[in-house]
Amino acid sequence: MNLHDLNRTDELTRRQFMLNAARTYLGVGLFPMLGASVAGAAPAAAGAGGKAKYVIYLYMSGGMSHLDTFDPKPKKKAVMGPTETIMGKADVQISGYLPKTAQVTDKMCIINSMSSTQGAHEQGNYVMHHSYAPRGTIRHPAFGSWVLKLAGPLHPELPGFIAINTPPAVTSGGFFGAKFSAAPIGKPEEGLQDSRRPGDVSEGDFDRRLSLADKLNQQFHSRYPNADVKAYEELYRDAISLMKSSDLAAFDLTKESQATRDLYGSGNFAQGCLLARRLIEHDVRFVEVQLGGWDTHYDNFAGVEGRCQEFDQAYAALLTDLEARGKLKDTLVVVATEFGRTPEIKSEHKDGRDHHPSAFSCVLAGGGIKGGMKYGQTDASGDKVKKDVVSIQDFNATIAHGLGLPHDLIVMSPSKRPFKIADQGKPITTIFG
Image (cartoon, rainbow, N blue to C red):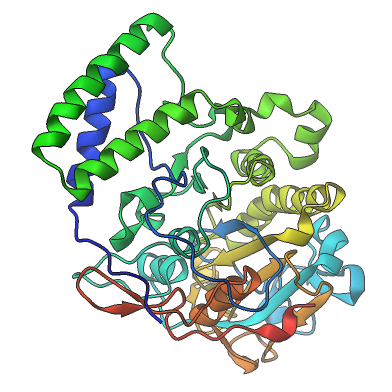
């Protein structure tokens, strides 16, 4: 079964034209919008399975050490160094650096048998986000873009795919086009930029500029009646619609109580997790939040402890808060990274760990996932997968299954090449309740 072929477009040129036109005529900026009129294709029929409607995708950039987080080896002191192990709920062992996470392990499925062939950051990051290895001849859509393409947006005005603290390179719509790229947010407290009428432009002036722009557009569209121009017009109108939407309040963290903000923590990642919760409550389908700094070649234990302090509080708060609001059951919370770290501790690098793609851990929670369990197993030192190997493509197919999306659906690129949301990956169906 194939979706309709996508038209070949020069997305970067078209998008730059939109940005320049919006700033020149309206005094505002445009960003990738995913309202129903812009999405382009009708949602595909959902496959059997998943209960999730939303994804909060927490990406640990740099290669999170599985041994010092979710796959500790307490009997191997030479491997663990100073990292201690604690017992969480449902008798799930994790790192002592994650005491708050230990209190929510009953909601988590920790996949300890991840394995990849990509041992460099750029390639590993790309495969995790796109399911395919990078190629010079094509730009694959990001996973969030696939979700929007296959499932469609939920909110008529808000973007359906939003990325917080995440480089645009890994959240691009690829050959789906710029309209499927993530709307980027830098600092969570600042919300979505260029989404309001500037203070020095009165409502009357703004309406006059819109009227002038409409007249110019009508002349331009009558002369150049093609799909790219039509797509620009729709994107333009959706941006204006968003500016007037009452749901822009979804981006305003000041609407949260101080107690709730304190529950998550004060860092960018912590507040990004809080913003993600607000966004899915307003029917944003896919939100990515990135936490960097996991590339611990040098001084691994100090580095991991510092990263875990920020992650631990925010992650535990997110799961607890979602559950209290009745949203965990339909929100799949993902923790992912490009690879793990070596069991060998490099004393010459101040006790660092190197890249280790052959075995690492990722985590799923909510959205119909069985909690309080680990899936797969590494050997005694965490070097190799011993049981139930899971490829990155299998992991992404599992997320698709959790959303009820067809992981085996073929979509043709503009160059007539077949692609799937998770390449040849197969979902782990046994971890769903």
